[in-house]
Image 1 (cartoon, protein in one colour):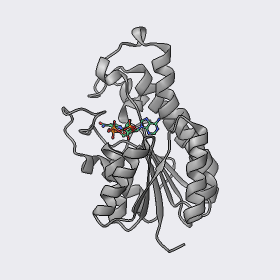
Image 2: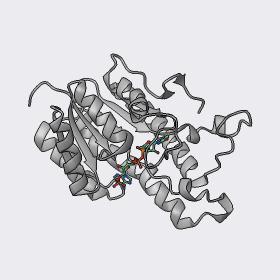
Image 3: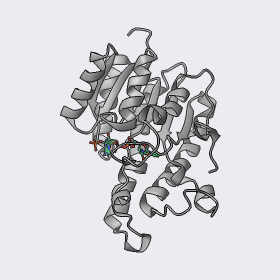
Length: 243
Ligand code: NAP
């Protein structure tokens, strides 16, 4: 095992996750790109290696706990520890449809939570033993300002009208998970935070979004690389977000 820090990013085959992986690679990390499609993750990791970065792909479908377990075993065998876990994989089925809460199908609600909430829980539980072996372990949960009850309930907020029950509440639940793990792991100096990348041009964010993936990746990369990271916070580029 060399002295390089090891980061694992879920949903890393495209979008913000791919860009976070690239930027962490540029910061000198060994980056494990995790994604559910074997070919896509291999291609994404090869692309970053082509840019001279130390990048490797592993299959991880966050909705399948045995897949998370297998990915953790792979990291353990290869590196023996994990320094940074970025829980970035996420789905937002209602963005394309604009489905109102009263029209939302139970299966859509459950599928959203499977990825955005239960998936993160499973990945954290399987990666925690490896994170505990790091000198400065960090868990970064890719949330959204849409998960903020503070802004969702504020008629002055620009996102007040974005009333997507499954997506928004799954990120609210994710924020609760962030706080719970942050409290439990504070004594062990494991930093656990939620971040919002802003509205970013990706398949999920659409072409209408004003921000680039570089801008969207910045807050997660900052938390992964800064000295003495905070814990139990909900952050974007501008600072703390109301819970
Ligand atoms: P994206 O381009 O659609 O990428 C989403 C990623 O998540 C893809 O790699 C996707 O893999 C992966 N994923 C979905 N389900 C998965 C599963 N079961 N297991 C493993 N990976 C899975 O979207 P993005 O905009 O980069 O979003 C990344 C994160 O940022 C999400 O958590 C999203 O909620 C959050 N976010 C985005 C915005 C925005 O404006 N874009 C704003 C706030 C928060 P496949 O390619 O296999 O589908």
